[in-house]
Image 1 (cartoon, protein in one colour):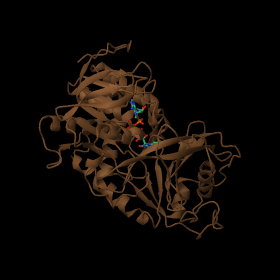
Image 2: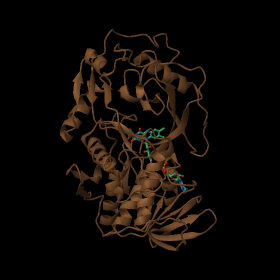
Image 3: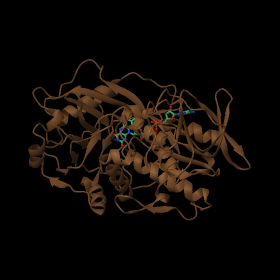
Image 4: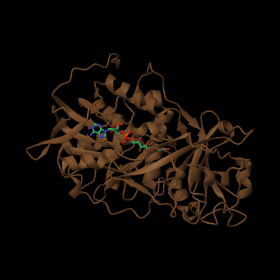
Length: 448
Ligand SMILES: Cc1cc2nc3c(=O)[nH]c(=O)nc-3n(C[C@H](O)[C@H](O)[C@H](O)COP(=O)(O)OP(=O)(O)OC[C@H]3O[C@@H](n4cnc5c(N)ncnc54)[C@H](O)[C@@H]3O)c2cc1C
């Protein structure tokens, strides 16, 4: 099939669509793309100026497989193959450029909190993800500047134990060679928009949804800030950190056992240790011992985020449009913790490099991909700082779910399942249900 690129992007807004997707982040775009492939006339609406300008623009875009549950690993594994075959997934080459996957490998530090990596390893075993267990000495073979002393459990900066090793040696680590990141998350989202447009999808920017229209006991469209109503048979909440507000508009909160809320997070960027080529010799490190995750960043830098160790206070945000966007002591804390693991990591005195953003967290840090109690209203929310990598696989899942439910399937009673394209594993969408009990196997952190 020859696909037409819609170069001008100035659509004539219709009054009726098959599906309105609230949000044009990576997951909103992938959901629309898969629905468009199934023949739905889709419209993504976003209050930002272009695709991927929401929390997707702040993502660290790490593609990795160590999730606490086999279902978590399966989604990440499935998503990985779409990123590896990006052009084939899109079905075109975007004239704006194509996002690229960069492999770095991953060093996972074994800690008591992560049960010395046992859940991760058994989940990866189930999916055939290759890994090697490493002694502390072998860790240095992989990353010459690694400090293999144990510093954990992590403590706050004002604790006298901060920065002091607790023992001379870690318990070891796990090396996962297939791990990396996408070089440009915004571009990847625009790539998916372009692919969706080629399938007839439309996008509306600088436009805020203020209400969900209901008719005859089901969702029937959305109301915009200027009062315009756009009708649709299906409405999907993919609003990222605004997911709670959109669910409230739809009146579906009472019918959920798992809820979502916004968490303020910071990401620190610092230069690599002097004379070390971190771009080529560094790797992603997931390090519960110091309480951080990190990866090489463009320009021989190190990007650092928090793994929410137990000692840290979490900063929940009531209004995702009103929170402190300045870097704080959290930035310094993350850098100082990382300097415990990477020998010679500089600790700059000014906090100029980094960002502040929001995760859309669920109660158990596992996303909600589901229908709702309002027929025709669906949600892909609670992505908890760890679902960028899964977006293409989530798009497929949401399209399967919507199609089945719109054809009369009772997903709450008998969860929809389908065979994933690459892993050939059966995906039971019920795992991500809004009605589930809190999943006790979760890490209750960004690790998922
Ligand atoms: C700092 C940070 C680091 C991360 N690192 C990783 C990582 O390394 N690996 C990984 O896999 N994941 C990571 N994530 C998570 C990942 O980025 C997110 O799960 C993913 O980007 C969410 O995409 P989305 O499309 O659901 O949401 P978003 O990108 O937030 O898109 C939602 C959109 O909805 C729009 N919207 C909201 N309300 C309205 C309204 N009323 N009307 C119109 N539009 C509205 C917003 O403007 C926004 O553009 C990270 C997230 C953050 C914040």
